[in-house]
Image 1 (cartoon, one colour):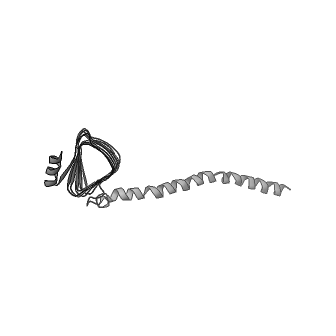
Image 2: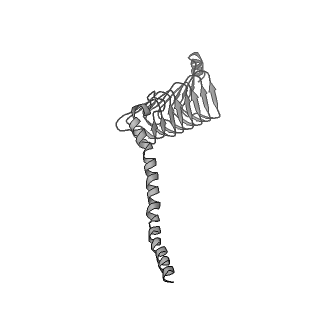
Image 3: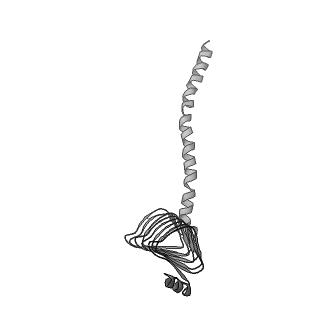
Length: 201
């Protein structure tokens, strides 16, 4: 055990072996390989490799998760990779994202997201580009809000068409009172009848 920790210091990598349970937050300068269980937040300025269970938020330069169960928010300065047999219950914010596992939470990616054929996403997605492989399942709203394309420049007719129904709807509602106002025309004979009775008297 001591020899392993000495080796991890030389390579600037901390290892949490399988079977280890840590109750508390972890802050590290360098790489972290986590195979055990952490009940707390993880904060690293380098890469975090996870093949275990985490209940807490993860903040790192980049994240690689496989055979993991993570409950918490994930924020990466660079990329995040969520491989198969991984379930994440929480939001993900990163530069790039590759998903082959399951995610339930909001996904905010400044560049590109690749959704693999085994991915299951119950998520609203914001990204610059989205690549979805055949077999992937996505339940949520996808928005290319970081793309440089402006939809109003490409679909000006659609935008105008979207504006036109409003006056039409207003015109329809104006016609309805006219249909209701027709009984006023029926009321005119009553006035005529009154005039007839007055002339008779």
